Image (cartoon, rainbow, N blue to C red; front, side, top):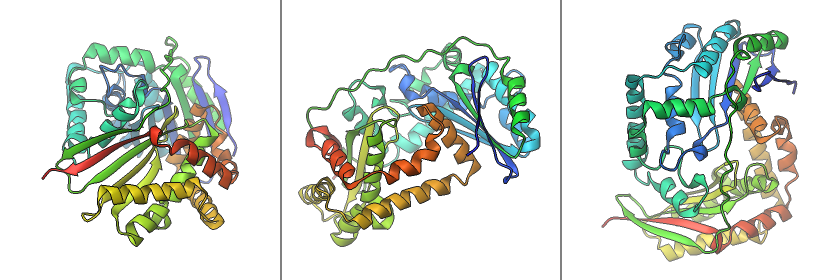
Amino acid sequence: MKIIYQTLANRLRVLIHPNPNTPLSCVNILYKVGAKYEDPEKTGFAHLFEHLMFGGSKNAKEFDHYIEKIGGESNAFTDNDHTNFYVTFPGENLDVVLWAESDRMNDLAINEKKLNVQKKVVIEEFKQRYLNAPYGLASHELRKLAFEVHPYRWPTIGIHPSHIERVTLEDVQSFYEKWYNPDNVILVYGGPLDPDFVLKRIEYWLSPIQKHATIHPTLPQEPPQQTKKQKILQENVPFRAIYRAYHMPGRREFDYYVCDLISDLFSEGRSGRLEQHLVKDQQLFSNISAYVGGDIDPGLFYIVGELMESTSWETAFSALEAEIEAIKQGYFTDDELTKAIHQHLLVYASSLISIEEKMYQLAFAELLGDWKLIEKQKEIYQSITREDIMRVAQEIFREENCSEILYEPKK
């Protein structure tokens, strides 16, 4: 993969991926700020600010207005580690996109009215997706149970809507000045335009932005969990459900990829072991899945399932532990392991067909420390052995490393 890499004088990192085979261009801008950098008394702020970035800047009064006018599309998302924005557009309109992006990076214009509008939007999202949805607060409860000191103990949406309600214009300006600076940005361009031309236009629009350097605080390290944690919730839910989490390595470690492959062995499609054995064969769960959180710092490996009405807690626990023990002892075939690797690589390669996803993955790989990780994925997964699976499974699937929420329907 051909990449032109450049760091501007203001420390903004630029990656350009020329691709003459696509008629569209994409600009992806990743800001190295997520929920883990928030004040514990002001959570949900990074997500709120993602919304505010579309509220208009000094010259680009309505960001989406200009993007839609040139036939482009834009969107964004926030997680615990970063905030990501992207625009897909016809290449000849590169200057419009870079102008709009540079304007909101340099001079965001938020007033009381715009702030209140976005606060209402986020609070409504909080209510619909979390407060008023069955099992909606499971992620809140599980994170709070599993983490004691690391800021992963709250989700991206925040701890409570009251944190968003209390946000002021002063808070907004302070957050903007602290995090939305060129040295805290990774910009990736992909498309058919000449890379030298693209680099010159990026330098023209973005290199004049001069702000103070962003300082990332040292985050507290989560200590090893010494005992199993469990919380039983009686809620208005349709079925009994297990939400279980095990502490696992962070994204920069080889064992993260091993955990990811273990989750695929458990529940990659209909052939996953949990689906085959606990849903189809034994009919103990109506659905069950395993997945990794994907966090950069050491995060969580999740197993989530809803029990059939006739299944007791004891039967569910026993069956689930048997599946976990099988992985720990290597009771899976070589074909299962090979299939899991191939399926993972196929899904990953298919996702990169999308220009938006490919540019994001390049930015994220650079955030991890090396954009070439996007090319090394195949090599990493193919190097994982049966012994790696067993070793990591035995390390993380320990009772004292487990936190779980059990949902009981109200009578």
